[in-house]
Each structure stands twice: as structure tokens, then as C-alpha cells.
Image 1: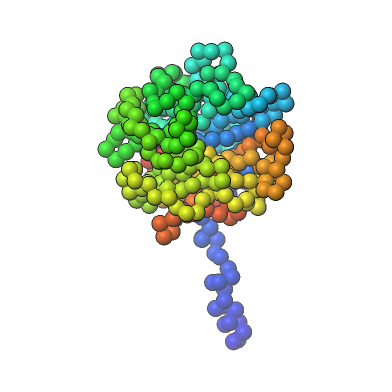
Image 2 (image 1 turned 90 degrees about the horizontal axis):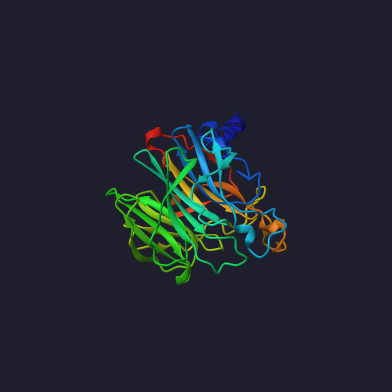
Amino acid sequence: MKYLLFLFLLLPSVYTPAQTQPAGKLAPKPLFRDPVYDGAADPVVIWNKQEQKWWMFYTNRRATDTTARGVTWVHGTRIGIAESGDGGATWRYRDTANIGYRPTPLYTHWAPDVVESKGVYHMFLTYVPGVFTDWNHPRSILHLTSPDLLNWKYESALALATDKVIDASVLQLPDGTWRLWYNNERDGKSIYYADSPDLTHWQDHGKALAERGEGPKVFRWHNQYWMLLDKWQGLAVYRSPDLKTWTAQPERLLEKPGQGPEDQAIGGHCDVVVRGGRAYLFYFTHPGRTQGTPSAASSIAAKRSLIQVVELHYADGKLTCNRDEPTFVDLDAGSKRNRKK
């Protein structure tokens, strides 16, 4: 009897009841691979009101193009679309975005951010006017609108600090106005910002963060603003109470390799979706560029990229994530009217 009582007392520490499992469906690893070019990168996730599904937009790099010279394989692409009908846990390829802006025969679409306002979707898209073998060419950020997330109308090219800008991140501020952060490549790849009352008219305000990096992602969680920045050594984390002053977190996210399938390389350019008090980090990685065993730079293995997801955790003023723990995704938590805009 004493032995049975001893085992009973031990049970809470060795047995986890089913009800403690996070809500949602277990996401696979990898989360998504593009079936056309196997080069999915730079994801952004948004709720499609018309289709009642979650959509993911992504840069669709031509990783499997064996004829590409230099960096032409990351040029000449259209934005890919994947969709999820189970709250963001599993995804399937849907299409490419029908973007009606092609002033030159050759063009490149990169790294969109998408928001919804008053029933209209707005995309802020990096546009490169050609297909180039190197990085030494202009790029701009376009404003596009859509009623359905599939067909996009060109509205304008934003007048920002320079003619070489990429990677928009857009957030609505408490007063209803909008702020856009972006990478100014002509200023050491530091982060600049612009403000707008209506998503159409923008005023550039210069430098927001004197840090070198790409793909800024700004979001609000646990009563603070956060910026994640792709440093090519994982994601740097900055927090702010007011979107004016940013404090760096010493530890980066996704810098150490994971152990799951095709997750052994650093994580890059991400999106964050906050739902039901939880935050999900969607990121891309080059699975062939593992530490210690890098693939040849020109190989398909080195170029190939895909999307993964991990849940963020908050404690003691810091963000962390464990890419090796099971990730249960539930983007459908909460009412539909409060879905990510």
C-alpha cells in the first residue's frame, strides 16, 4: 500500500494530462514547400474573409532553375500563395498572386506584407525592375489593393528615403493611422519608417533602427511592441513601449539549428500572427545550409527554401521559442472579426 501511495504522489511529475496540450492541430515539419520552384521564403499570413481560409503569401524563388546565373534565381519570380483550412496547421499550394503591374518584360516580386482595412486588402510589395545577376539594382515598394487577395490593382510606388528599399512591415497604430517599416539598402541595410493616415498617402520619417538586417516584422504582444529582424544569424529581437525607442534582446531566435525534419539551418525573414493570446512565428529556412556541412553555393540543395512554424513564448520581458517542441497551431482562436488585419 505504501508503494502504491508513493507512485500516486509521483504521477503529477511524470504524467501530463491530455488537457494540458496546447489547443490546435499539430503542424508538420516542414510546414510548407512550394511545388513549383521549391523556393518558398518571406511568408506573410492573413485571413481570407471571402474564402474563410488562411492564406500565406511568399517570395517564390526559383531554387530548382539549373540555368540561373549569379542571383537570377531569386529574381524573375511572382508571389506564391498557399492556403489553410484547418487554422494554419497544414497548407497547400493555391496559386500565384495576379498583380497587374508589369511595366517591363522582366520583373521581380519579393517579400510582400498584406493588411486589411475597411473591407479592402492592401499589399506592400518589393518590386525589382528586371532579372539581375547581382544585387546592385534599384528596388521599390509598391502599394496594391484587392477585393479578394488574388487579383491586385497597382495604386502607387511609395516615395521613400531612397531608390533601393525592400521588405515592408505594416502595422495600424492605436490612433488608427498606419506605420510602415522597411529596409533601406543604401544606408547599411538599416531600418527606416513612414506613416500614413489612410494607407495611401505616406510621409517618410527616416531611420527607426540603426541595425543591419532584413525583413523587419513589427507586432504587439504582452502590452509591448516587438520587432524581429533577420540578421542572417537568426532573428534579432527588439522591444518598445511606444514604437520610438527600441531595446535589443541579447538572445536571438532561431539561431541554433533544430532537430526536426529540414530544420537544421538558421531561421530567416518571418511573420508573426497573434491569436487567442498566443503568438505563432512563421519563418523560412534553407535546409541544405546546415552548420558544418554547407551545400555548394550553386547547388539546388543550397538554394532550396521552405516554411516552418514555431510558437513564441514570453517570460521576464523576453521572447523565446523552441523549434524542437511540437507546435500546435490554432489561428482560428477567437472571433473572426478579430482576425489579423
